[in-house]
Image (cartoon, rainbow, N blue to C red; front, side, top):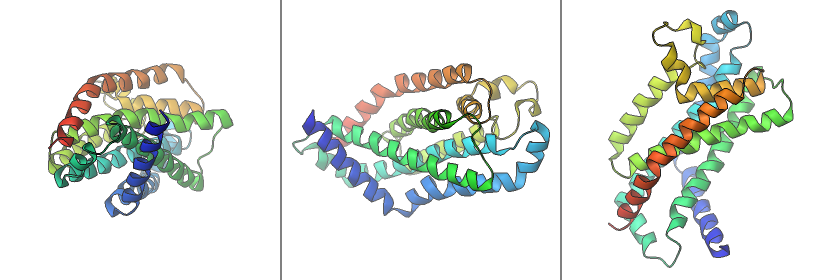
Length: 254
């Protein structure tokens, strides 16, 4: 196990260094979420605050953290496709290392990247006026929600990346992100949507995660939306785990 942990850490460092030298990854994972947050606050901040009675940042900061997890996973998926097409995965496959270390290192690198993105978004939110009202322990739990959401989305994107081309991955995730963004409770309050679509908005995964983060920062229910977030994450993991492993093995043996 010591050898496995060492191999995972070495490959994690490789991925982090490669991401740091890739402008697309840096922009999508770190810069775009913060710009997205500032833009949403400037355009929709006052109307949403007037409609809800509290700062719109309690919805837009969680939403930006989740969008950062999505954008970063998409950039990582594109790099995975490049490494597959360049034959790098195949070269790693013949090395005397644990085969599982390749996927585990990508997961650990994604976790570190998600934490960095969430912390940067949170810092931007603080500069705009966002504050935690539920204490330090709730703030730490707040940072864990994008990890739950992001790991599940990473598995979905990684599975998709192992079976499709660059353009298909970008288009598919772009459409999905747009739908999740425009129809979630972090964008506008639930009662502002038409009644016929409110059940969809309320029970989609991003709305559940945002509700948890709002409860941990502003106050409100946490358990019910947390169970919804965990349910969506578990469903995604269960659906993607086997195809992801099979696809990674197939891509590495090309």
